[in-house]
Length: 143
Ligand code: FES
Image (tube, rainbow, N blue to C red; front, side, top):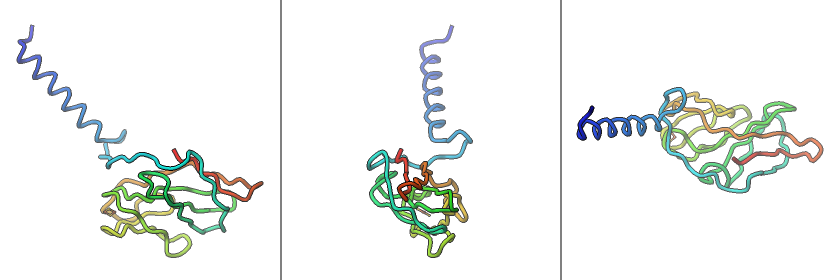
């Protein structure tokens, strides 16, 4: 039977292990700080031209906004503009299909949220986005 000291040491080790694990995602990649989602649960914006990216302000992670891109006639993507490195707000692409750059340390992301260049190594958070053709809108789930 363990002594009281051994029992407390085992409890402390388990708690430290659990705390360390919570800072990693399912793939073992460290996660950045998490921010609450700001804004209404559903956001609607006018449908843009194929290749165009539009910024939506005051929604998403910490209210920093989203970048919404129409990647084809029938498909749109919405990503957070919060950099996964140290949470700066990422710029919109300079041209259709261009990368989005973080002004703080230069990370580059695709409009789908993938990392092109570090120091960030985790992709941007994505949001569900669909085209509502009947109303010529993009509908984004802000959750
Ligand atoms: S905060 Fe974006 S690259 Fe550092």
